[in-house]
Length: 502
Image: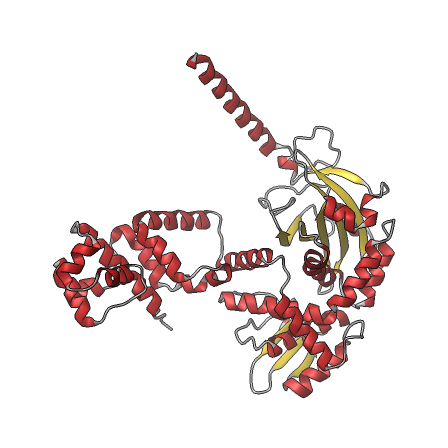
């Protein structure tokens, strides 16, 4: 179906064209006002994309500028502004989640109007960079969501309150978590869902999905039978989130095949947040975290007991911590990472990340680089790969490490959970929560100061690390060497200039 150019974009295009013709004739807004019989303030509103004049006023402007009516109202901005014209006609601006960041489309139009040629050149540059780095629409929209989470310290009070209202309504506030069967019955009885557990035997291409949603008068939710009960409960909790929060636009699968709009991305986040909030009541979780943080020594069994109490997975639990720690403990300098690895290979893929307050280390690097083998995440995955699969499935590997990032003052307390993926037994996953080691952390977590926790100097990747005595190195420090060469060139140039300035 052809996209219609939205009214807001029509105003923007017309305003830019009017300004173009006015400036080509060397007219000020006052001059054009006198020639057309319109007020200068009205013309200014048109050029900012806030007004679209009626036909008689467009004719007055066309006569004043000595241009055909049809030319003035056409959607063509001219060769110099082709990229800008294409952007406005594509409705891409309405796919960008500008309002989440306090920006109205009209604000952007105002920036265009100040110097549309330069704005068009900037747009062309950004598009070229995106093409060169093969940035897909999905990546852009997911990055926008991460920025939105970071802007709000990943805590959303409105969603927390909706979850609390839900729990109180069903008298579930005292439960450690909500059993799968209770959620299943609620969705069927109150929300008219048909819940079907399946292995997708007839369509093996769907076996990697946790769930598939089929809309209709009686919505059908197909849940992968290979999931753990706690994972099934999370899927049902997310469906309740969609229904209770009245989130209509959505993807049909649990993970993305194709992202069609930012609303899909945002609604999936809201529904998932709601699910985590009802399965792990914030007040109960805060009390348990306080008890855990008050311990003098690092106790991984106590952490696993907490996860078992909520009958959840390490990943869901760690996600919930990224929401609770900033708001209730002031620990807002943190990162969340998820790595995947196939046992027997040296490929470690960063598949998910979230950084609060700043871009922390490590973060995503070029796929050709080798992540630092000193990070607890990588050592956990290596250890898991060496274990018997049945032994590894019994409970996740848990470890802690103080990681000092080479060449900076940054130091992190990193807690990692490694386990095989439920739907793909030949792939292991490791979740890491990294907390910046600062006064806030030391004041809130007693065992963070314990000397028993091992400390290691780490880096992003072998290619970026100049450490000469690293036994874990698996690749030459080619990027580090290039940086050193560049630094020497800059120093030599500075010395040369200073010498000849005298």
